[in-house]
Length: 97
Image (tube, rainbow, N blue to C red; front, side, top):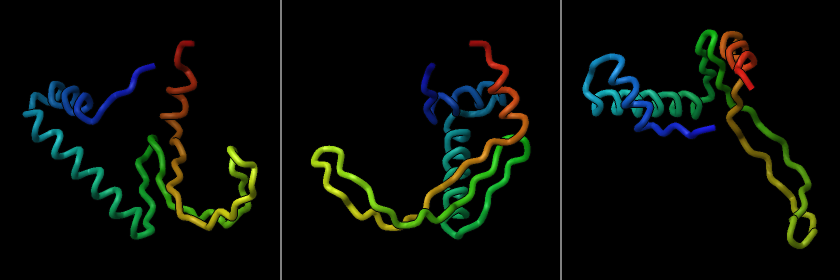
């Protein structure tokens, strides 16, 4: 399994679109910034057949420090949740092993 960076993604997109890589990279960066802004506002992002990004509140809980074994109070926090869409789920499930 490989890791794809933003730069590699921009290279691939710019080759397919035959557009300058710098413009593609700026477009990807703007897209990510706008997605972040919307999530910070509490909005839900829905990309049909790909997935849904939402923010959810996790409640406070009691955790344990793995080094010392001491109990630690973990405060509530807001996290991003991703739910994959139908097409993405199907394509990932049908990957060869």
